[in-house]
Image 1 (cartoon, rainbow, N blue to C red):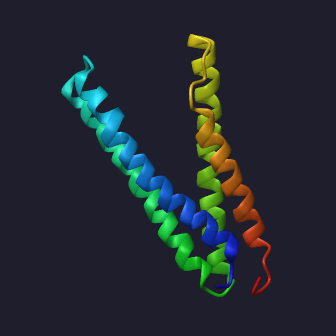
Image 2 (image 1 turned 120 degrees about the horizontal axis):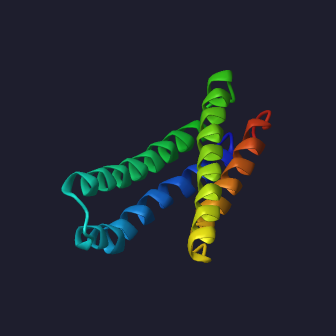
Image 3 (image 1 turned 90 degrees about the vertical axis):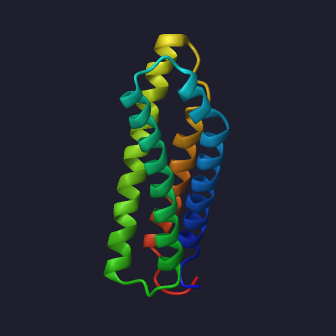
Length: 134
């Protein structure tokens, strides 16, 4: 193993894909089917929910593979792309938190992805600094 930071974030992303799918099947998607929404709107929500799970799984697998690769410019570039994606997720989470708090006074559990993605960014930044084996 050449980069433990990539490996840890890859495992977190893969676990996140599994828990995202379990949560969706158990609570989110059944509640969506009971909501009074048009069929196309429900389809968009279901599609986006599955895309996020596939995104987490794909990033997780890529980072796990990158953890065993030499620390080349390609792996660092890929890590910077994942950092950018996670940064965008943090920004969206923060906007969602502020919008939810201003509308209902309760942030719910929207802060959990923001904190998790922030830790992933930190670990990936540390991983880009690795010079060889840890």
